[in-house]
Image 1 (tube, rainbow, N blue to C red):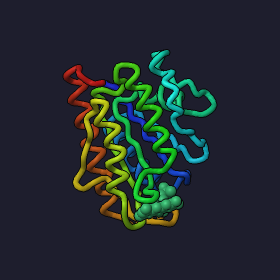
Image 2: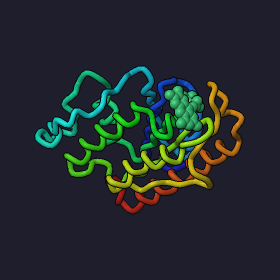
Image 3: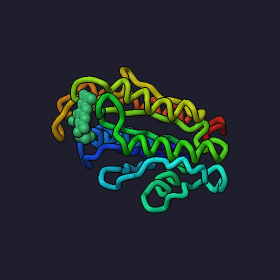
Image 4: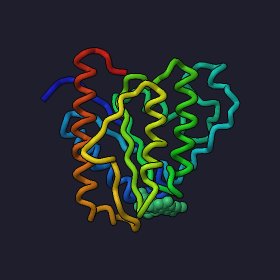
Length: 201
Ligand SMILES: Cc1cc2nc3c(=O)[nH]c(=O)nc-3n(C[C@H](O)[C@H](O)[C@H](O)COP(=O)(O)O)c2cc1C
């Protein structure tokens, strides 16, 4: 076991805490724990992150914070800045991410860009749930956030998707869970290589 400490944070943009997206993210984090990572799952459901107001205060203040202090964005952002790997999960809502996931992307992304790209050379992974269709579009939305910020996107043996509608239905999706296990291994591999080289974000 390595003495190196690795950190990963998973953010669940579902309105439903403990639902299918949470279960997929937990599976990824379980794999990372076995690889020696400190892990944390944050569930946005109920915290109602509001969207970006385009005030551009983050560009003026350059203090790694959003000017809006009435919700959890700054606390989550601080944990993203500390992490080696950031995993963002969302159920598919109308063929895209949930509005809370988009609020996270817009506000964390704008603050990151205003502060010299805070997430550069971190590892990113998107995890998406769907009942039937539209998950690839949601998957792309999350990957756009990683790729504009100079992050390394981890893949798996399939796109990182799960299938199911009712709470817990994803448990039947054995291929989805196998995809999460391979994703964990790939995230761990990239983070460890970057740390060994001293080039992680
Ligand atoms: C408002 C809303 C819109 C949805 N839109 C889609 C959709 O476009 N495509 C799809 O396959 N499933 C759609 N679903 C189903 C969810 O993606 C599915 O139930 C998922 O398992 C929910 O994940 P959760 O348990 O983490 O909340 C939608 C659900 C809701 C509530």
